[in-house]
Image (cartoon, rainbow over all chains, first blue to last red; front, side):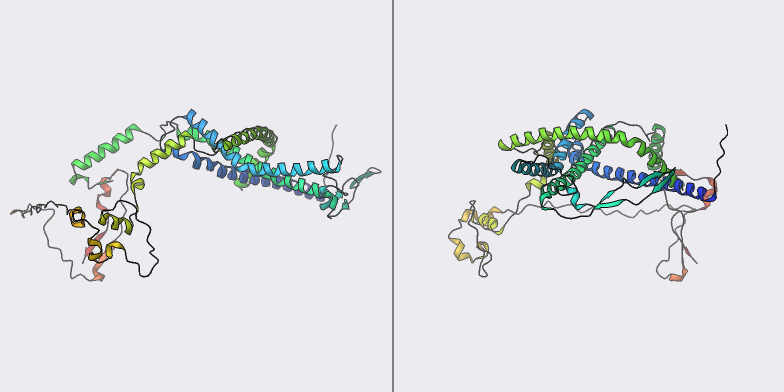
Length: 228
Length: 203
């Protein structure tokens, strides 16, 4: 069975445009990943600042000790960076909890867009009518706007809760990302700071350098042709 | 163009790895939350026992000691004030009450006329007796090197007096050559003609 697909000029243009968009989307994702990597490297450098003194003064001399010490410092830093975020989250949750307790309204929907929820201050579109298939053909339609932003007095608790959830959550995630970045940095330092390596070391080259230096010291007149 | 496609490849890789990264981050987040709770409880307990969660670890204390040992002068440095000088001159080791130095008519004790201080200063504690001039050992003059009667001269390096005072600027030609490198480099015979450094030709 042979299927013959004939593409018109418009179809070719459409396919080319879609391919271009596809590639650009992945390139954009690549740049975002690169940005996140750079940020994590910067966050990981904080660990160097914390653990530098004991390593430089040779208080810590082996990998195991370093890992134990760096892990303690890492968790402490995480606690220091994230306790405000957790407090914000807890306060937001307590506000919602006390509101429900005092009003005896346990069916309070914090994401509702009609009256009680955070959705009242957002644009809400209905996409259910966008795509329709009638008599074998696909019909496209614009989404219908069902809510435009407006403040509702009843929804104050949901505003507080959702805002605290967003702020505290993002803050906590950033602290978590920093924690992971520092953990990665800790393992990198374990190998780089306490590794005995012979990379770039050459006994013959070193011997030749010493011999030439000795020759120059002993025969200063004969070293006109030697540039040191 | 290569970097563009590299980014495209990285983007594809990130999309493929993203679910695993998210799962790992979620697990780490949960673990971190429990550790956070543990540290919060520990911090509370330490707070009520008069200590802090952020206090130095034994390694930090040892490192600080060693760092202080590297710079011993920093610890020994003391600030000497006018009051210290006056009390030392008077032989008074106790701390004197703070004088009001903002007073425009304020005169420090050591600048006051001698009649006022004579009574309070015992003779055995005078400045002249306390501070003894140190005996400076006299250094012997360095021996002057006598010029040798006979100076050896070589044929290839004749002792020609150089006239450097009456040379005009136009006559000086600066020749720039290769700089010396830090790596040992033995020149070939072909390179012998080339000179290193700056040559000044006098026409």
